[in-house]
Length: 273
Image (cartoon, rainbow, N blue to C red):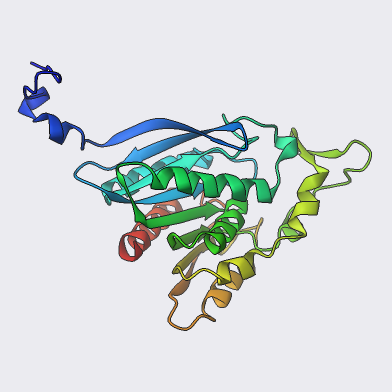
């Protein structure tokens, strides 16, 4: 028996007001600079509003990420009664735009818009917002936190601190772009990166910072992660920590590494939001 318009109990005798609080994973589309961004909103079961977190994917990544890492993270946050929004930066995944036009500054703009959209969701407490960033997404997350005082907690996974030192962009002069594994990376990328100071930007945030980094990361040295924590600790009383996972690679491609990262992240966000 089910009839939502009559006020009768729904499935399993559940009153209509309680049905609104069931766990939900649903598409969420929004715009930034007149282009559509594709996201997925996860909300926990139970009564909100809930703390909310945005997830910033890495270079050439997407809102699912390698071995479904972001999906697993969002589902664990559901269990911890934290909402989350994972999304594709413009030019990546299902979002509008072309990868050749991608720059870190454009991704920072997308992340800030995602944060604002998440904060407006009725299930989310706008006073308890956080950010997770992986690799280049870690740089984006750091800059976003430095520019958005509403962010109360930051988790960076294998974060890039000096992009040009880890990404060999090649010579873009002949064509205006270089081939990055089948994707066109535009000349604007390198020009934009040279202007950013992500470590200093994160230093302007008051939010506690957790860095998780693989000890055997061949893509981004652990020193990048340490630089964020060292800078954050300069602010007296600010909580900042790094956990280096023995043997782990850049994107934690082993079941136990993944579990460690997800549990440590969920614990941190549950404590700080």
